[in-house]
Structure formats: C-alpha cells, structure tokens
Picture 1 (cartoon, helix red, strand yellow):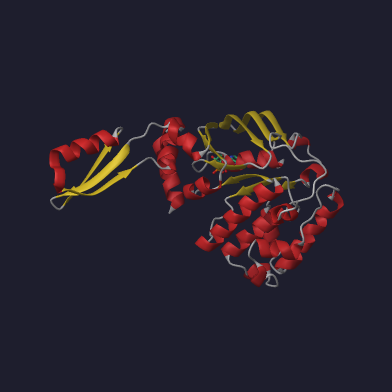
Picture 2: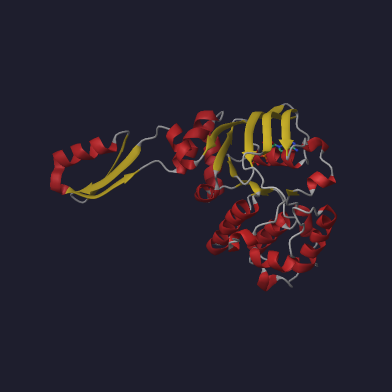
Length: 322
Ligand code: ADP
C-alpha cells in the first residue's frame, strides 16, 4: 500500500540507510594568518538528520560550512562530504549539494520564476534514475511560500522574501545534503513556521541531511535532531537539546511573592527549597514559579566554559539576538 507521504517522497532504487554518514569531519583546523579559528572540529552527520550549528559570532560557523561546501581550503584535518573530499569535489558531486550563494542577488531584474527555472536547468544533466533532479519550479515556489511573488522582479522582494528564495535555490536541485547559513534571518513568525515545516518535510520525506546555523535557540530546539555548539575552535557540545541540558548542571530559579514583595532564588534542589519556603511562610507565599534550565541557559554555560574570554563572546550573542 502506498500512503500519501510515500507517494510524495522520492522514488529510490534502494532504500537509503539512515546510518550512512553523509558528513564526516575529523580534526578540522583552519588558520587565518596567525589566528587559529578552528582548532580540531569533529562531528558526523547521518542521512536525514537535521543538525543545527550554534556558536557566538566569529566562532567559525561560516568558515566550517564553506569548507564543507568546497569553497574554502582547510588548513588541516579530514573531511568527507557524501564520501568525497570537498577540496577535490567535481560538478557531479556539487550537484548533490544544496548550497546558497549570494551572487544570485545580482540578478535584480530577473523574475523569481525565471531565476529558479534557470537554476533548475543547471541540475538537469545530473538527473539519475533514483533521484530525479531538479524539482518542478511551480511546486517549489509553492513550497517556499512565494506563489504570490513568482512574477515579481528579484530587486523588488522584501528581505524575508529573498530568504525564501535563498531556500528555494538551495533545494531546487533536490540535494542529498543542504547547507543553510542563517536561513530565517528576517522572517516573520508565519514564514518561520512554514520554513520549519519545510525542513521537517525535507528530512522526513526526502531523507535530506541538513546543516544550518541560526541565532534563534528556540528555532534550534524545534528543528534540530542534534545541536552542535562551536566555541573556542571546537565542538563543545553535540546532542539533542535534552542531552545538552543534562551536561550542564545548572540551577533552577524559584520566584514567588510575599507581602507585596517579589523574590528570586537560584538553587540546585528546587523541591527542597520550595518545601522549606512553605514550611517557613506557609500561606503568605503567592505567585510561585520554578524555572528550569532552558537551551539558552545551557548554551550560555557551554560557551562560557569553553570560550577564551567567554563573557565577550556571550555579549556578542546577546547583541545578535536583539
Ligand atoms: P561565524 O560564522 O561563526 O560568525 P566566521 O567563520 O565568519 O564565524 O569567522 C570566524 C573568524 O574568522 C572571525 O574572526 C573572522 O573575522 C575570521 N575570518 C573569516 N574569514 C576570514 C578571511 N577570509 N580572512 C581572515 N579572517 C577571516
């Protein structure tokens, strides 16, 4: 029996293994002049996984992605992208990747549909029996929510619409592996939710492996099968949001009010503290709240622990959020 989802998914000659390593990064190092930006980055991504790369500004996220895309030569280390060293990737390899270049923005006079049709043409020679490339341009425009703007000139699009077009360009070739550097910057909440649905569909139905960066920790938590935190030149945390939270023994925050005054107290054992609070002040306690560590707390703690001069790095992150 074929379900709707199966029908929508790509036909394949052999079922891909979810254990297959699509990205393998071992001891990756990058030095700019005398500055070591990446000091030994290690991680693996498997087929159909969504990885979110987090880190303070300047941590080396873009550098890492550009090395994996084959646009930047690394200083040292071993990198496998779909089984190929990106330093030696050919056109056929590149056609299997979803990459967003900024250069399409120079085509201001082109219409959205024209540009996507043009990009689609690039992938046609690389169509294989098990993975028909490229995507149908009309369906793609619908999928990224640009139907109303398909015949607009690129120069007239808003920032959020350009980001949607970025994503469309990234997936037009039906990539096995998709790289997205801050894809939702400038999205309104609805566009963000549509994008999250699209990412889940790509990973679940098309088995697309996705590596993306964001400054939005809420988004990271919603999208990521795994979160990687890059700080001090290394991956300092790698796991689900819950796994990461367990690695940081952070305190819970207890808030309450009593006699018109607000109180806050941090404690490792919130249950015990609340019990003692009630034993002492009983019915005078009101508006009780216990706040456990969020991904943001975990992130801050990890970055603080590993960044050289951590406070500065965290300030940068906070600025980026505003
Ligand atoms: P992120 O994406 O995490 O913000 P980047 O990879 O853009 O970090 O940059 C990491 C560091 O490397 C920054 O300090 C940046 O200034 C430096 N850097 C990036 N590209 C170059 C370059 N081409 N030459 C010299 N330094 C660079």
